[in-house]
Image (cartoon, rainbow, N blue to C red; front, top):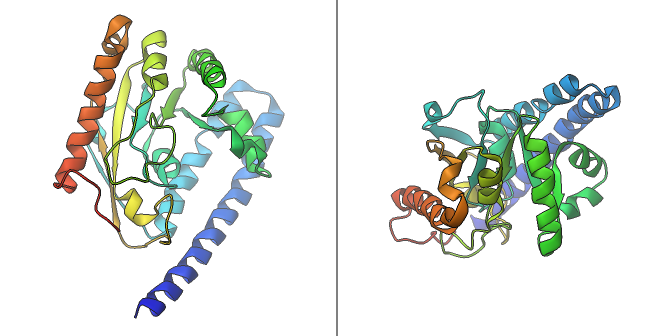
Length: 256
């Protein structure tokens, strides 16, 4: 039975890869032509194409999405979004559920990817995660871009959490961005992403499983300003942990 399951999941992985490639081929000319136009309004409008295709991707990947607390944020507002980071799907999930004009902070390594690297450089902000000077430079770039009216999505854990612990270290970048720009911060909690497609391990994408996203009320930037940054960051971490405890009462992620 295990062999049959592995074969079926492998076939599903091929299907998901085909979906991903197809959607990228659809997306590339839209984004490329918008950049080529040089018009700020067209480029801004093009930012909504990836989220639309992200929603299509989740459906075609066989993922059942449930959003809780959607009414707590203004779809036309401006926020710094953060979430827990457990899966390779997290950026896709964020794109699918965030309704605002949003940019992402991504790994600089992705700039080496053919086609996608070019677009990521034009639409998002790359960062060398292990380089403190580059992280500081990225914060400066984000502060400049956020002045244009965009929101930002950042995973404060920086890299995928592959441990059984709910959360690893939260870096200060997202909270400092909120504090410096006076833009409210919105925590999101992703439940089930790690079970659908973990960052590491032998498992492939598991279709048919439910993915739950919790929204929270926007937290004023003042909660992270001055000497309140550490306290504010830990309060956000506690909010996310509370959501996780509803689904993992043992206080740890279940072994999958």
